[in-house]
Amino acid sequence: MSKRFFNLIFIALTCHLACYLPTAHAEIAINSARVWPAQDYTRLTLESKQAISYKLFTLKNPERLVIDLDAVQINAELNTLVNKIGRDDPYVKSVRVGKFKPGVVRLVLDLKAEVKPQLFNLKPVGNYGHRMVLDVYPLIPVDPLMALAQQGETQLITSTATTPLTETPTVALTPSNDLVIPVAPTATPATPKAPAPIHSELSTRVLVVAVDAGHGGEDPGARGHRGSHEKDITLNIARRLKAQIDAIPGMRGVLVRDGDYFIPLVGRVEKARKAHADLFISIHADAFVKPHARGSSVFALSERGATSASARWLAKKENEADLIGGVNLAIKDPYLARTLLDLSQTATINDSMKLAKHVLKEVGNINTLHRGHVEQAGFAVLKSPDIPSILVETAFISNPDEEKRLQDDDYQDQMASAILGGIKRYFAANPALSKQKVALGN
Image 1 (cartoon, rainbow, N blue to C red):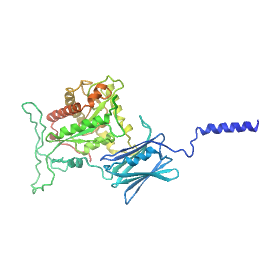
Image 2: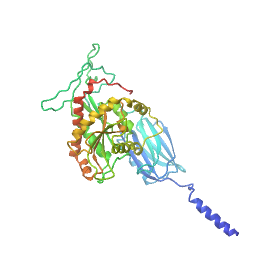
Image 3: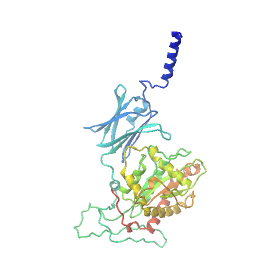
Image 4: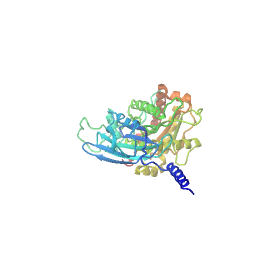
């Protein structure tokens, strides 16, 4: 064979292999850069077509986070990070982007306080590609009870440190059969004490309802044909429900999510428990592959499997929120294991069913019910061992007519009022303060 023939074969093989071997100088382009500030934590997300290699370290005096990104291109999208840090961000003051050395791009986050960062990669899921996620947590986690007190509350929630109540409250019914929420009597101290100063905690026990707006941040939830996102609608209804709860003497609402940011499912449960919530209400807006599906639903947890195929499908879809929103799987959460072990306590599920039936009846007065009874499935967000918990699907966002209603202020108010009506009926029939709550940690 001729030398020219061998040269042609060599060139052909070289070109063929070049198609499969990455070039040494190829740089990863950032397709999207997002920042989600919140009181709980600030999340920064970089999305790309390839996974990003990184190194993270901290600097003191002043407090800074430094992230070195390998083989990343400084493009217009990456540079947008500089303008995405708002003045109201609780933890991050500013971000700087620059070339540190050949092949390495450096991000420097100037901080407002000492923090506890988590940096991790997420594989492609749903509409997302590869994501590098930085979660900037405060060194001392936000206390839901303290946050509630800072909202200008005049009555503080008693915890295990408060003297137990010596009487059981009763429920009063007016002639018009309107339900009045029971308010606990003043706690009786075991031994006489000197008068407390004016700034001391009040001993009145307040009924606390944790209101959980489904989805948020990186996890938009379902999308409607009109462009609405489930995470926005659920937050609007949750805020309205909290406002209505706060207007009832002896009751307070706690928003599990009060902004557009992501909270893992088990984190929602834990936040409600830290606030010593008596009830947990998770608000959602259902979606289905066919646009004619309509109606509201109420769900409780099941230990023995779902009550229907649709309930099982919905629970699976809602439980995938952690995959979409992005959870650092390297962090082992002992709280989750403890929660799952405590699920043998069926009393909480029985109470959840009672609450769900009251809420379903009230919701049925303002919207068609998808099914005429409470359904059950293995929803992760309902797995609290000691708080009656329900999930309310307010309507089908995938139905054009119901999506329009979900976007309407009046309907959101009516839905919040209906849920509150069910809560009031539950408390009237099952006075929460007559039960001795057992603290399971925290």
